[in-house]
Image 1 (cartoon, rainbow, N blue to C red):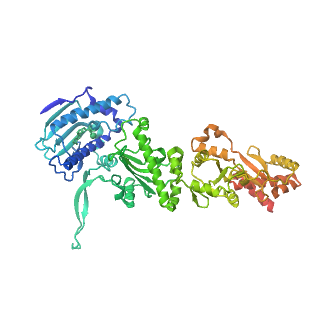
Image 2: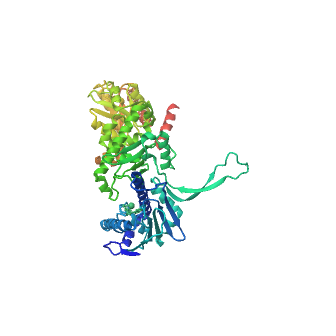
Length: 630
Ligand code: ADP
Ligand code: MG
């Protein structure tokens, strides 16, 4: 029997381990299973290389609860350790790692988020155990089994063990404050969370399955049951395979495995696979998106060699892609560091730009290969693409090839296609190309119709960040501007000639202006007299593009904030068509009362077409209308 002291500077380091890792005690199981997996994979490697006579077989890892004995067992059939190796790897090397780790973080007890992400390995078992035993037997011929015991003080014992078969069994004597880890449901939950895709099968308990009866079985024969190992994990998840070996259905079923509660199928997937200059594999899925920007993020899961690490990928994946789902697996992402450090890390930056590029390439090939299908999916993916165009310059450049601009009639143009289509008809007298758009087909119906009557194309742009995107396009592309159809009378949105002849004399205009000012509330409307087409509506309410856009941008963050639009009252322009028949009629009407009635009625009609007439005003309007036709 050997006794010894673990090589420590700090007298009692175990209480420290416990204290500093309090928020993340559960990771001990991930660490121990990772070690068991490493040991098994190392053995596989040795047997492949043929260095030693090893029967690899079909090794599994077993997790066993002994509730009565208050013990948790983690058993592997890996390469095991000799007594010498236990001394070296457990007493010296592993511990120096633990010490270094604690040294680094002992002043930062608050940043519990970073502590607990790797670094402690084997010794994290002391977060939940008052005593830990290692029973191990090396694969090397002629070596005795070893039995190591440590009760949480720097003292350990190491004696010859009785273990017969190759591998390692870790026994945790669970401490009184950690008895949750003796509950089957809790352990199962942890295995599901961290070990669902680990490469070695993990057994946790057994289950009964019914055996199929032979064909010639008697009718009253009872179906037979047999007990088999309950394997928790899928050791060969889709992302570890070659894309060529997977069918569309395989990707879909992997999606269901990842998100069992998600009933909607993903729209498409992207298989990531790179080994230089960093290692990364994974599968990303585009789910159906809504226009809700606050939709739950953090659905992408991050793995390190098939071990779950986190589902908070902020800083690793470009923000616009956090709306996607799936898996990223990389041994090259530094995990025991703070988020801000992570964002500055060179490898992580490369990974982010690689992922951005892959996503752009995939979208482009989807667009090229099956445009019709891509158009169908556009509504469900546009929010990610538009967000990406706004936030990543590289993506913006690439997206020019596949970003679509749908029209109100259901046609889809790329930017270049749109440009060529409308260039001749929608360039104004100052040589500026005006791109018309609507945000709501129903609410802006009359304006859309007016634009269409001129042969103009009207886009339907309805995502919540579209005002930001428009702003960006206007500054990137040359000599264009976007105008929402209800921003002004159509002739003013795309100005072609300088002046239209007015039917009214200057005197008449003055009379009209004064009359309107008496009736129309000046705090709500800026009256503007315009000689327009005599067929155009007599009264038109518009909201200037600039003002409306700033407001929208402010609502969705950024943009107009600096203009202080927040306190701006809701103001509209009232464009009065001086060439309309109705205006002549108002001027020609004898009594003031009648004139007022006509003006109010016209104003209300204009409000009605903008959806601005509500409540008491609407009631009054209806009453007045009945009076007029009585
Ligand atoms: P790491 O896994 O990062 O090396 P750990 O503290 O988890 O650090 O483990 C320390 C060492 O102990 C391992 O590198 C390995 O040599 C040895 N070890 C731990 N668990 C096992 C095991 N189940 N089988 C064989 N060796 C093990
Ligand atoms: Mg380890």
